[in-house]
Length: 248
Image (cartoon, rainbow, N blue to C red; front, side, top):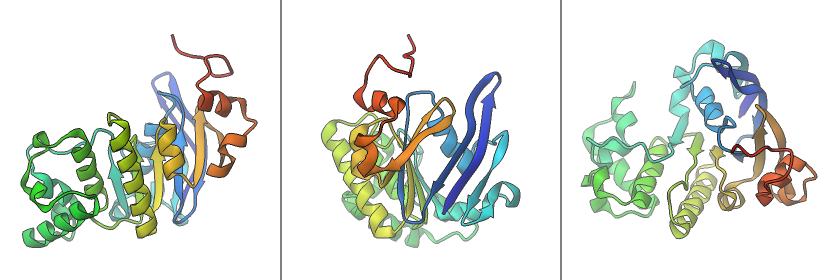
């Protein structure tokens, strides 16, 4: 479904992605791990078109979206942003259906409300939440609304950017379970970026680790603990000593 080929991206003198290549099969849940500042979020933003790569290619079902243009593919994507990224001036149902109402084929207000109610129910929120504003929601509720927005258009591909950041362990577990259930139900292809290993074990079919601007290791979730890769093992164990230098 997604094929990233030799993507490079620098910011001034800082080389972030140094020839990243990654394949994600249709219906697969891929989780990308790595330390802070290793380029996980940059990779997602490059695929989405929020950041232009310096070189490389990105294919969606065999079509080169860097040459064709991403606009025709955007309806196929959903995104749960880190921190929720809800619009403060819009209520919940307007946030959930923002893209559906303002897209190339806009839907009516009544249809938008119906869809918002359905998606709220799917993420475990009551219908009366639809009229509330983001400032009236807890962090966990905001994350669920963000998830409802990500699936509002029934996308084929969903990206999750640090989905459990800022949540307590119980709510993080709820979000992980919701993500896994929804991805399986929809048959969606998913890429999640996180450094939360609980999320990795709950969500992933396969795992890829970024370090030094490249994919250092990739494999199935079942092989994660049995790897002989020193970079991956240091990351999993949280060791201060190893090939990954801690920034002091």
